[in-house]
Structures are given as C-alpha cells and as structure tokens.
Picture 1 (cartoon, helix red, strand yellow):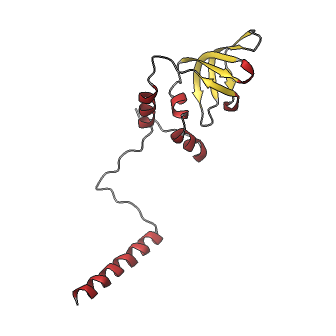
Picture 2: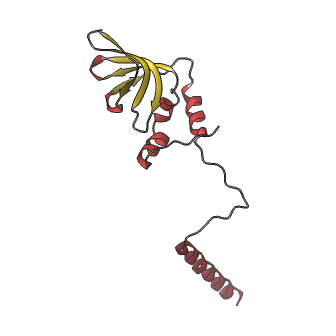
Length: 140
C-alpha cells in the first residue's frame, strides 16, 4: 500500500533529504530516545511528523536523576531530541530505501499527455519555428 507523506513543503523536504524517513519508519515500534539534559524516553512511537516531533503511546520518561514517570501519551519536540536508538534488527539502509519507495510518485503512463502552461506552449512554438528556419537555411 502506497502512502503519501503529508506535510508542508518544508516538512516534505526534510523527509526526503534528511534521516527523518528512518525515524518515521520506527512508527509502531518500541524505541529509546535520548533527550537533552541527560534524560530519555522509552516507549511505542505512534507518530513522527516532518520536524521529527515524536508522539509516544505508553512511554516511560526517565529524568537526569533516574526518576521514572509513566505516561499514556507523550509528545517530544524534535529540538529536544539528542539521539534516537535504532533497533539492532533494523538495517538502516534497507529501511530508508523501503520508506522512500512507499512515498515515491507513481510512474507516468506513456500515453498520458502532460498539461503545459500557455507560456510553455508559446516557448515550444517559438523553438519549433526557430528549428524550422534553421532547417530552411540549411537546405538552401
């Protein structure tokens, strides 16, 4: 099943040009995320958005003193993330390829006409006229 990454143009850029797609592939898995100030969160990733904000389902937050806090839902802003632990059983390169192929655009049908703007049509017409004139001068 193909799914499309939904987000702003900036979020889509981050998704396709950074390792965000790898983190997005972790949705539905239990992971550990190290945060700033020596704290970390362990839990099931529910959603990762285009700015690497992570929403956890059941999660355990451990502060720098070792105190544990259990949450049913927890939201972590991407700017607070220091490190995302990738599970050992996940091959990073293959996961990135698979994730990017999920959102790849469909190949265009060869018979399908591409709609062109008036400006593009005019430029093509001028180009063809120039080529025709060059052919005429060549023939003489």
